[in-house]
Length: 350
Image (cartoon, helix red, strand yellow):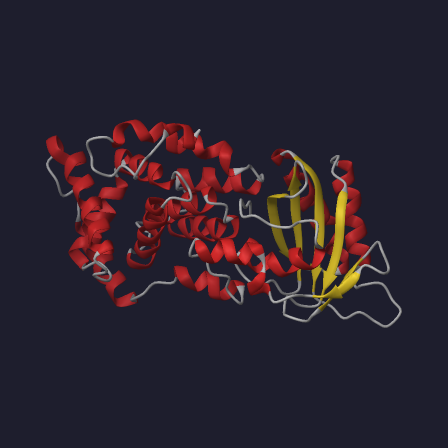
């Protein structure tokens, strides 16, 4: 994950307490690597993985460390969440922390902090691996600067990864079955070729209007029309441009619609909104949710080109700014279709 949320990265307790908001959920039995960008107090790439078995430590360290090379980082904080500390002993998993430090240093990245806590909760103990008297207790995670910024943007930190993944679950399997039958019966897009793009754009506009009026999930007919619209490359490209500027209300509105359609469309058709959801979440800095959305897209359609491309970009740790050009390229045709985001500026996407 890459984030643009403010954080006091020089305060270990504040950094640890902010992790649920930086990765989207409260980590447990996890290793978290957080990149620092110049001058050191700006968060860059954030990666989370399950704590590995002893025999897999070296492999996981080799897999995680190189992904920070692309983000212009000046160093990395290593965090271990989980395990019990024995009296008079260093924090647990010290050997794995050493493996990570060696791999990061081979990539030219020093470990600026190496921290441990058993859990991200108010009053939980924390400690440093390198400095014996570097220790304390965690503040309430809801009181961090990151929490305040996330709350202002409407972001929620979930208690577990499973809760976050549940956002993508189908609302009604019965509705999906009906829509799958109707979509499979279509032999061509449901609009005349001469007006196809305009008609499809009107379908997407209408979906945004219904969302603003809080009219609930789409009907079967509306879902089939939306699935057909998003299949058109021109419409898909227009929808990519809705992701910028990432902090704008229009981008949040678009992300809400793509999430709704992921839950309302059957495979393989849900791959289109899932890829758009992944792109939008990635640009706003939520790499964890972006990865889940892209996995969802590839589960629905394993050969989906956009989702495959974005998944490779995400796995390489590419900063979101690098792929904003995709949205900028789609911005030109927006004019006239009524889908343009408010105050869209190509410079914001470059």
